[in-house]
Structure formats: C-alpha cells, structure tokens
Length: 144
Image (cartoon, rainbow, N blue to C red; front, top):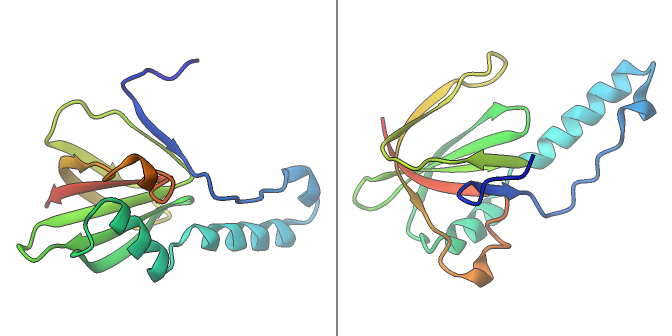
C-alpha cells in the first residue's frame, strides 16, 4: 500500500543491523539478550540528542526527562526559557499524519511508561541539510 503524500513518515537511516529470527530458533536466552542489546541501541546519547535538537534549530532547549514508551520508541522531554514544553520522539519507524492541532498523542503500551501529550504544533527541521541528523525523529510543542 503506497504512503499518502501528506503523511509525515520517517525511517531511521543510521545503520541498525538486525538478524532474522531464524538465527535464534531454539535459543530464547540469546534472542532475549539480542533484543535487549538492540533495544538499548535506540536510546540516544546526550551528544546525539544535542545534534538532533540543533537540527530543529532549538539549541536553547533543556532536557527534563526521557522515557521508553514502546519497544523501539523513546521520548525525550524538553523545556525552553519561556517554560514551553517539547517532546522529541525517536523510533525506528514513525508515521504521524496530524492535520489538525491540538492533537492527543497517547503511548499506552502496558510494558513501558504510559504518557499522554496534547500536541500543539510540529517543529520543522531548520533546513534540508539537517534532515539526515533528525532522521527517525519528530519534535513537537505540547501541553499537559
């Protein structure tokens, strides 16, 4: 099924090698450890977060917290000097197609942290040369 032109879809472009399940057949411990290793690879380091936030031209944001909300999804919460709140969403595959704001975004996977955000607007990447740095992420201004 083709993706609609209006959808804001991003796939992570940095290399994440992922082995097919056939390599773990009959070895649940190895599969579990591989999942944990791969899952930890999703977490963005502080330097990675700074580069991504700079790609959105928001270098003055200060991180307040971060959470894993799904197996391959992390959210990072930020505030600016005027106390506006921002959420950076990082995932292997993101498909958000919000045409109208405000928009309720809910993460409620029972295995991970449950969070709700009332998204006010999407923050665009500052220019075409910054798209690669922001690959696999979205930045939104939100309210509680």
